[in-house]
Image 1 (cartoon, rainbow, N blue to C red):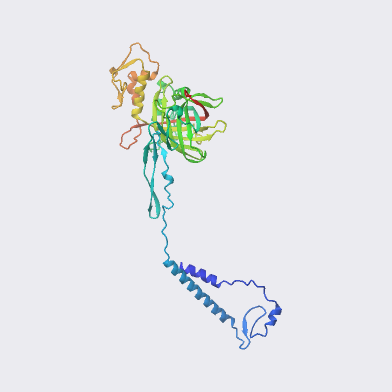
Image 2 (cartoon, one colour):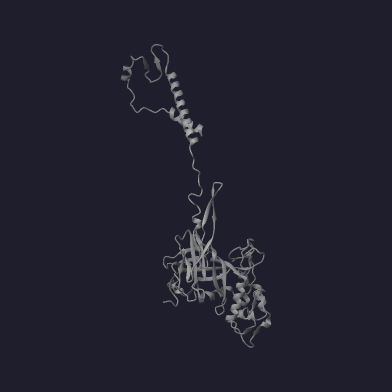
Length: 454
């Protein structure tokens, strides 16, 4: 650094600064001819009249030596000042780069506000953010909405303020009859590789494909779901439909959808029974016009219209291209890069499947009496059906749905064997959740009202 600064000072000191005065003309030069020293007509060397010796080079050498001395002295003074200067250390945590990571959000069940206070620590001159997680439960009668615990006295007071879309089509993935020879997966495989083995996991879709000869094709089952109450999704907090780092997803059961004017009613059963909690909740982001939800839950109804089975997806994932609709004020959601539709996937706890089947027996199987009123068909601890003698069908009674017939007869064990978990969620070496993936399409819609609300 001393060499560089010295060079700069020498360069500046030795630079020839041109005169701002106009050059002398020949007359003025003639006037000076009688002086002791003269300059030739070209302004060149200076000649002594007494000795005839060129004196200019000696003077220039003296000037250069003086300039170098000045430069060296200036450099020495500058370096001395730098050596004695106190250089303030650079703090990588000022300004704090961890503040953005500390933003609060609602938990997926809308029962608490979760914050992530962060501490910045300098490690080898680089900032390292250490995040904590603090959950502040909402009070009774409150739900966490828009990053705040908000009073919601009834479902009629639930604020529906975002953009809406209504489901027009759903089907399980993995319903193709034959695998694709290039990928060894079915052509409609959906939607996520949960265990990292390189293949899409969709055990529930596989099960419904195998049971199609008994229950009918899964597409027909989902048509019944859409007909009796099409799922209705709401996106909240969207500031930019191309790229938005955080948006919220909430869902309801729709009713009375009118395609002609693009309106829908939020159904009276569009909330969790006995609560003001919506049956779909999650949060995510929009990147390049694609919605990514990577944490949430979804409670849905699977089965024929007259005999539904309620199931809950945990770790809800959604991947969908979303487009705002200026006419209806909502948004449309469809597949990315030519996919069959938007991807909706999750994990269902094994016990949740069996609890749903037991509940189905309570609600819809009218031709049977149960020895075990809590678990009429399936022993949750054992993961298998109760012995047939504990399920006593009424003679001559005919069930109205095929699922009850399966649960009542010898096919119960066959049915339960189909609903087996395939994913280990806690790393204990045991499968405890069933993977599910489905395709769906949604169109933009406006809400007319919430059913049975003033």
